[in-house]
Structures are given as C-alpha cells and as structure tokens.
Length: 116
Length: 111
Image (cartoon, rainbow over all chains, first blue to last red):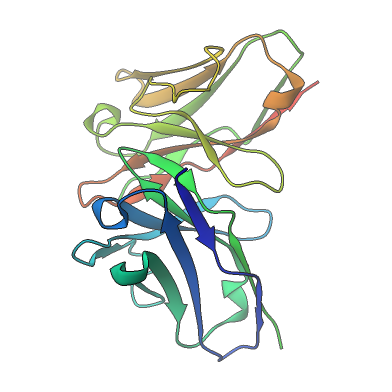
C-alpha cells in the first residue's frame, strides 16, 4: 500500500525553527514528485512547492519562495518542509502529497501552531 | 501566474445534481489538465477527477468533469447527490513551471 506518513503536531514560539517530515512507503520514493500544501485555519488549499527526490529538483510557489525550504533524503524515503524563523501566520495544517499526473496519495497532515 | 475562481458555496437536495465551476483568470483552461479534490471536514483531500474528466478507481460515476474553452472554465458535476458528498471541493491545475494552482474552493451542502 502506498502511504505518506507525516510527523506529529508541533507547537512552537515565534522565531523558532522547525522541520516537519513526510515518509513515503510502498513505492519507489525517488520516482515521483512530492508536493507540500498549506491550509490555514478555516481556509483553502495553497500550493507551496514540490520536490523530485530522485535528484532533489525543487520548485517553489512564488508566495513561499524564501519563506520555507523543501528537501528530501532519499536514503530514508523522507521529504521535509522547514522554517528557520516561524511567524504566527505560519499556523496551519501542512499536507504532503505524491504527484503522479495528479496528487494521488496524501498524508494526514501536520498541524503547526505558532504562538507566544 | 493565473488564479482559479470557484463559487463560495452551492447547495442542493439529495438526489439532485450540482455543478461547480472553476474559472481560469489568464491563459487557456485547456493548456494544463484540471483536477478536482474533495475534502471532508477533518480529513485530507482526495481526488475525484484528474486530467479534466478521468475518475480514479473507486470514485463513483456520479462524479464527472469537463472543460469549456469558451468560458475558460472547468466544471465538476455531482449527480444523484448523497449526504456523503457534503464537503469542500477544490479545482487544481499547473502552470508552465510545474507549480500547482488551487482554486478558491466550494463548499457543497446537501440539504
């Protein structure tokens, strides 16, 4: 079974750093793009960026370029989303999803709460 | 980059048909495939339509998708509406640099 398992909920303070993960299983992790999607409380889906774990080719949505870093470690079939300095406005649910010709498998999401 | 605009909400009775539009702001709707995702409260999104009009296995044929170049829009139609169809629906396409763009989302209420 193809699965994406995301790391657990995080509660952080403004200015702190954070790295959340998305571990793929049941398929060749290096052969498919992995995308990250933000959903702020009560709001819609926002495309953040995408990475190809095979060669770490990474593309960012203009809205998120410079705000986050997307990476992957193919040796452990895991993609990451990280922040160097969190803001309260980063409070959201973050989903990873595998892209075939569409986003066919989604993780359950990681809730990030940033509050002083 | 372009935007995808959807109606905020639609509502209909069980057994009826609803159609949700997704209008592309610039560039041709036909230039990149459109997907539709269903998101029930508290759950991750799931795909109901991909590549304009294809259904993943397991998605009932009550769900159908189409595009209309004259209005530069895509549509998701749900026929024989069921209470389990109550959810948020998002259209999604890609731009020329392989970046995804989501629509604004539509809340479907089954009366």
